[in-house]
Image 1 (cartoon, rainbow, N blue to C red):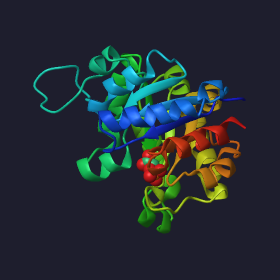
Image 2 (cartoon, rainbow, N blue to C red):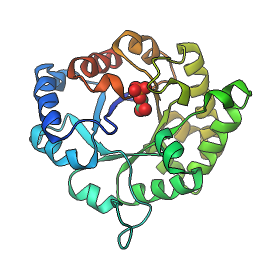
Image 3 (cartoon, rainbow, N blue to C red):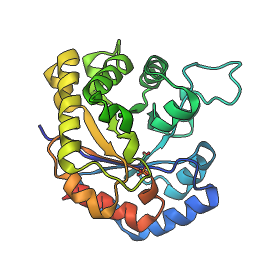
Length: 255
Ligand code: PGA
């Protein structure tokens, strides 16, 4: 089964509109529109999204996503952003359930499931983040945690919906720490996640769903990770803040 790898830049709470414009002018110099066979996505902070759209100037080779979304349609939810608002400004993707949202904002699988359903209903592609903490891995709970994140986070979705979304496996201990999972460990976790998808949503969904790896991905380790059969791209934080290193990771996935 050939799946198109997807490389996404998760800028987190970095890059205001001006910095984003500077990034994109440097990124254009990398001539990545000619780099075929890789889906490229930038996920800026909400307020930076319009500046990214403007700088892209209609260029279709890079998609834009948001870092989070409300589980409600509209109304009295101060500080929240709806799926309709994201669609209106041209977003195609939305990251949900990032470990920083789980850790600092108490987001649970059940709550994230509601956001995934809202995103799908609005035609957005959810990038659903899952992954274990170091304590969970050391306690031998890796598979138990991943299984519950997949089963609860994707509960109630159709096989087709699961086939079309993106899962990002991000071991929490590897995020922003410089510690990457070895390619062997990452591949094993990805294969396990795919097997859980297969049990619940069938072979077709398991074959089609793309599973990104995230956690200290950089140009130096991207090729090895991207060569693994069940790794279909990367969700990149720190190394996506510089156009040259993000471009190098994209090229590693294209090979
Ligand atoms: P990192 O972040 O690449 O800086 O480890 C990845 C992420 O949190 O998505």
